[in-house]
Length: 250
Image 1 (cartoon, helix red, strand yellow):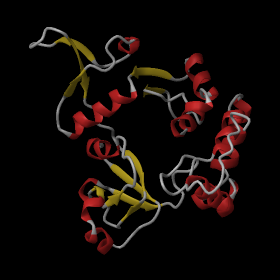
Image 2 (image 1 turned 180 degrees about the vertical axis):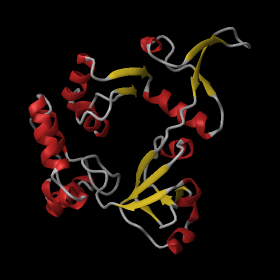
Image 3 (image 1 turned 60 degrees about the vertical axis):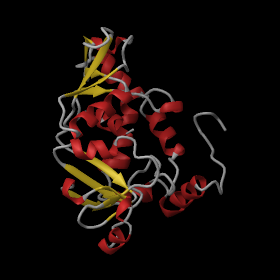
């Protein structure tokens, strides 16, 4: 969703992507697809989701690349910076996946102290490696907690302070995506975006309504339904309320 918004807002002209134009079961992005098919946005490189995680892990380890067998047999090498080499031990083909050092990364977490010691509930996906690979790291958090809370259970610190350049408290900051254990993704809003982004006019209307006309993230949350909507998403996440999916008609 978030790269989709940047592409639709015409602030991106080149992407290195794995799944930038897909919204899982909701379907492909109309805006992203138009941008690529028209040539306005160039796909500079293509790699699998797992491939990107290996790239961040290589960077986090300070290695120029990591060897793997993923992506072998796919056509991603037409655009990929990965290389196929011969394994010197077995003689079999091997994929070398180059390290990726993002200029900056933004990671949203469940809680964090003011110094940047961040806690993540549930699966971390690539967050831990990405935090170590990025040249600059901004942590946004559902809430800022006292550093004494971190000291009580240091094992929960997924991202340590020395990797972090800035901390921002942004309640519901993962919206319209989900935050594991706190709130579910806003399927109604996702459906609205996918519907409006079918046309350039719809994209302009969406950006004006939800991004350009608001002065704060809190104002944006009010526009999408406010505290009432977020409480509903909390109940859906905790299985207290049934999920309704606009993209399936249920």
